[in-house]
Length: 306
Image (tube, rainbow, N blue to C red; front, side, top):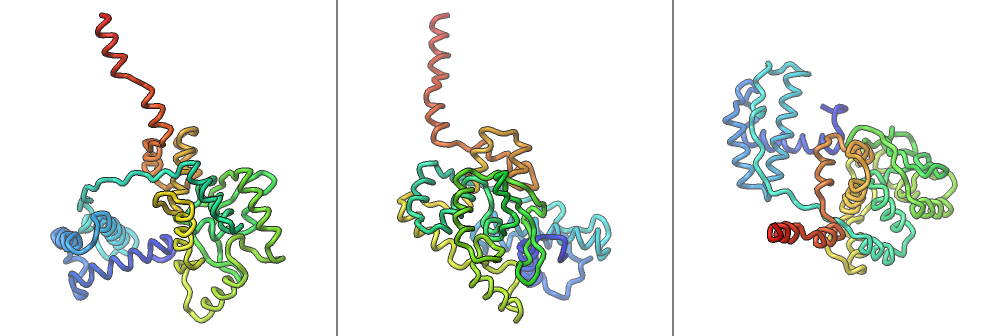
């Protein structure tokens, strides 16, 4: 399985497999595991996990694992995947938390640190995921054409091994604001240091942990990022949101102007259905525009005239 999925996905699959093994027993042959065992496991998980979404993730993970056991390993024959026909439970999909422009500006105003201003600007303007931002190197930045290459990294002495969630490199545009902030960060960066957002001190620590076997690609590249973001958010006095909501807001903005295939590519979505939900997201200005369209009033008025 290793090498075929992203490291974070691999960790989820290993953890889910342990849960399933503990439930069913480690001595049961794969060929003896039936759909009724799968259903019983999911029923057990639904009684113990905090959300239906977690149980659905278990279904997807175990379905993929057993599929590998059939197609790549030959441990099972076709049709023996016990999770193949297990349906995911219905859930109420959470609304996209759209960060308004005025909220973003409030965050930027309270983020006095240049590092944070650069991070927020790229998340909101270019729609990068948190780890995509943190793993940016100066080689990824095209200042002249105002582009960022979001690319996987092979491990070297000074570069940390890292894989994209989508397993596919992409190029995204950079705003004038982000370009200037990146230039300011580069002007303060030590000569020869490869990373934009990982400090030299942090890189030395990570390299040390890697040498002694206490580092893996899913370890936190920057400590306390969510905590520090929440400090800025509270100072800005805006409603609860996360760094990932900045990315979601960037995608929502693209969806108002660009075709869905382009947005899918810019966002790095492997499944276009993920992109499609951003075309259904409603911003406050959309609600204001909608309130001005008195469709029912017009229909009733026309009926009276007739």
